[in-house]
Length: 344
Ligand code: UDP
Image (tube, rainbow, N blue to C red; front, side, top):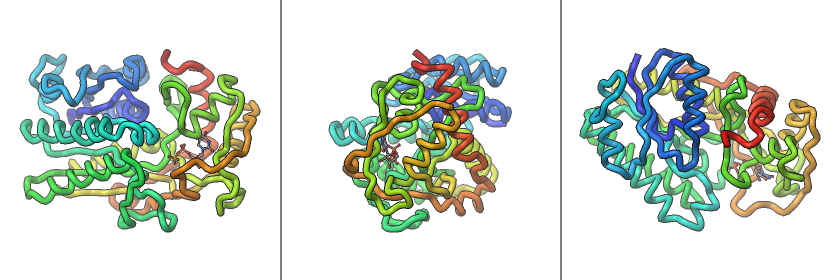
């Protein structure tokens, strides 16, 4: 059992990971400023697990918040943090293009402040939320970890910069244990339908958009590009069930805490690609609703196909995905139906 700090633990991936870690018997402290998440997610995580977690409400940019997170404050149980899982950050590609400095501040500077606080507290074990976005326009697929890191937007650059910062720390010889997990496309929800993804405003991503069309909140889906070199002309992605992803974090943490200090850089994906129209069809079957769509032009910056080669994660963590596109659609639909307006 370890005492774990989850920055951004109230968000989509953070909340599902918090649940998996509580169920595994760990103690969980969540640091979150709720700028893009809801305290309700944490209430439901506690209800589902039957266990309580500690909350430090605030941002990484606030020194007092970090101080409290690392044991300077009063907790119900207290004690030192054994490891950090760092989810906190901004993740909208379009917003990052309009406001690059915001991304350098929140994602890069926020991570630096966190790492400084960890170093001061003598906690040098961290799992970092990285992203397949840092591969940019991949030259081949499936993508392996040694393929070029070539971000094409400020969001991707911010993830690459934090990976670099972590790799530099590992070079100091100060016994850092680091896992940078490069997520492919996290989707779905906990099968209870109690926690799930709750994007603010009009969703940018395919899955929340499709489920909002199915539930009648939006009239139709725009399919970005039908002339890609794929089996049906629409873009292919590697969709990973958020519960598989949460279990991947648990496996990464177990590996870091068990093995000698090291830097792990791993793709977390299923290794399978699905097109936009595959997703539409699977969602229609899972929901019993129709998902009207219109084929429109390609979205700037999109790639035809991004699929992970997840074999290194399988080898190093003993982890692989076990849930299918059908499971993703069924669980995503259960969440959407029970919470048509998310946590609001
Ligand atoms: N997509 C689409 N319509 C939308 C949103 C996304 O056709 O309203 C497509 C997009 O072009 C890509 C796939 O769905 O091929 C996944 O897009 P998403 O934004 O979810 O993830 P990412 O582009 O970051 O992989």
